[in-house]
Length: 595
Image (cartoon, rainbow, N blue to C red; front, side, top):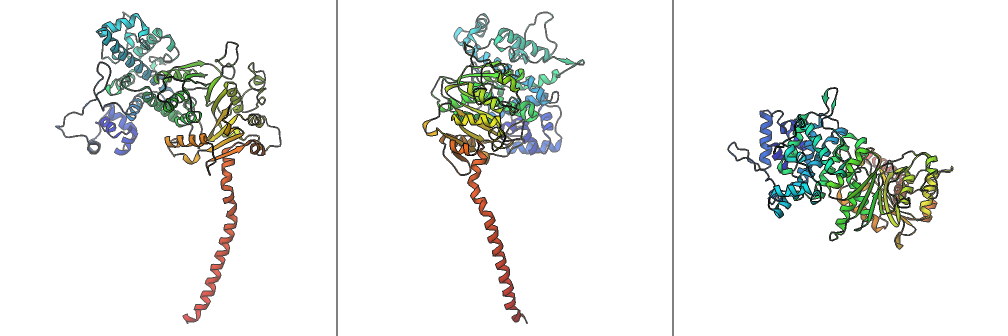
């Protein structure tokens, strides 16, 4: 009943808990039938069910279940899952094991399971298609077993979800049968990777049967709850059930929830959704272009470029070519999974971009791209001696070697990755566009900024609101670079302050969809708007000693008003004195009448 109420009203467990006046954990236990609500709670649930339009009479027929997919996996009209229900399914599964593992760890178990379920459901859809061509499912399975190229990813029998969930039986070889669901999942994932080597390092990153001090890291009973949640026919993840973007957004919801739950550790691989879309609308990718993210984390920025490209040119069948590099093994795995979940071809390489960029030409030079996007670590320290000896000469000839903070080293690397007509958007700390300006001492960051401005490489800077990012409450900026500006923008820098469009949220603030498109439109148009946009030329940047902070320039629009405040106060004091003097005279005139 509780899940039916939530599905009907489109609310989360947290929201349902608030409506019923109980804790989130209590709702979770009720839904998982770990205990039952008392009489008063049952009455409140019944009242809420009536509010949702559900029949709660004792003789009422059971609530209708959403039908399982038919032969081609198609749903009955009107019964496709909503984004909210898909997100809730994923979070319900997460909460099933949340007590076993802390937030940074339980995602390591859950994301591979989501991925495995997606692979299995897609495989079933493809087998159903083959069965229509060849007459039976058995024949289709035999063809797929003999030629794996007829399906996207071949799923060995023990890895198919019907077997994992116990809906169908599998005859294990002697002495190979798993003792429980944890061992089964580990064996299943290893079998998938054996048949699909391209998935190595993607889903086989955890052992579901791992033990520590004689105890399982994660209880098999909890894993079974997750499997049962995923087995609900309403949440099938096949080709005909959910579009890649639909499932991908639900998957990203899960990443965001992990980031909210674990702060900095998860924030390292997750850039807020709206920031990624803003970067895509700023760069306006075109079909067939090559896009690179050298610090790609979960590959979210790359995927959003493709989503926006399709939105801007829906008739084109030519996809973007996406390339990412990531240092951390965990984020590398998530990036590969995320690309496949979205049904997008993303080439991911693993390694330290600053030391060993993996995308190179046949001559050993850094490969260049039409678009570069990135959210590298802010204020990252780099060894100046190592940068000075850079084999690709990215720094010495592009403004010099930075010291201390590495924000401009990342922008210098970005420039090295751009084609002659390339453009880029990079998220950095706000200090990257101000440090060193106005100082009497020589400052290398300011000198690099000068080099970029003097060569007209900076198209603009967007100041983001406070408290958007998961690993900091500080505001960030997006620096937009262009090697070939349109004629109307040459010699100009567009500065945008997006702070006015923020919405307050918990635990993080956010930019709603209309605000994202609105901010992007302000930048693309490139005309001054009071309080939001300033357009400066090179001479003004030089006069400001290369301080490119939007708040410095856009704040000037209010400076004149601020200057008037002392005069207004003076007038107010004079007016108050005049009123007091008038009162004194009036009382003197009235005194004779009072006698």
